[in-house]
Image: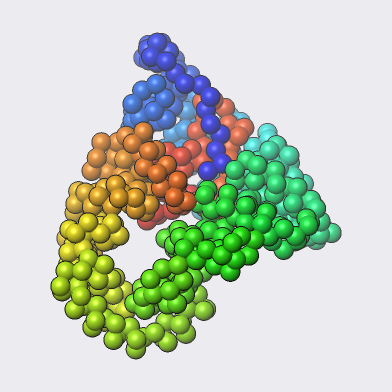
Length: 492
């Protein structure tokens, strides 16, 4: 996430002083103490206590605390999620001139969250925040001018506000401006400017910018074509979890473009992207398994990946899935025999086939049983799937404690998705004691393997770099609970 990092770290003595002042009724101290609890800064992270201190300060009229309490309500952090309450507190803070709250209120109005949708009113609040230099609001205002949201479309104004955000160093805005320059959007296309802005964002380790810069090098847009440099950019973006870059990097390794051909590396990066539910990467996984490129040839696994891609309307996968259907039915009979004799990989594959109706009629109870057999033999992917079964009650009764047990076993064996899940459980305190440090460790383990779920679009992230030290933004909800993309537990 492109979020502002807090430089200040509170010492034990500072926390004691803050607590003393807060208990005496000092609203500023109450808000800061709430922030410490929310962020785990100088104290053990406790979202509930954070919200309580925000409320004390907010009820005294502290504008930053009002915004922070609104974020708690919109994200369900320490309180039950309540969009209407969030809007109420955002409005109180916004009316006192808090730029972050003005932006948050505008977003609620624009999306109809906790309030009737009103794009005209949203534009008004976006403008107020944008005029204070809030980069997220500047991006949104640019979008309003582009998409006819509450105002008459005006490409010049859209470009002006986008450039303002980019010139403040906002990587998301720089990336969006790069694409604007590349496409033209009513202005003269300027690939040189496009490369400049993409490079500036990429230097901030923004994965999407690194990927886009790689595309410019790959195609020779605004720079001398350099496929090797493109691969370098793809590698950086892939390490930062970008699924488009991971797929592009896999194709480069598969075809030997810009880098020496390495099918094993290709399959590795296709898998990383496919595990983020990216259909083109799923199709590529089907291909490498069908033809044994960098992996052992396996018709059933190929059919499973093609099927997953086809379910998400990947146009190339329907025909490939149908082509393998008869072969899959034959392979299932062979694989069932091996699984019955105790082969863990075959048990795992049978679990997938029963779960996803490949070569055999769907039977979720049977899938659970096959996963259990393989998991008990230490198969990490089966352990992860068994965790999913227990968590969601697929083929068995829902049991979150058992799910965590199996996710942990898979995570300890290096299964990136399981590591990410463990981070979520510790981050949210689900059936385990909330522990932000443990959560961060698991997230980092997953990220080290290039696995991290990030917003797909530059429009999905709005850095609040103009927020004050005592102000929380939606973007810090991302940092606190990185489960934003998992099972819709977070609104943004």
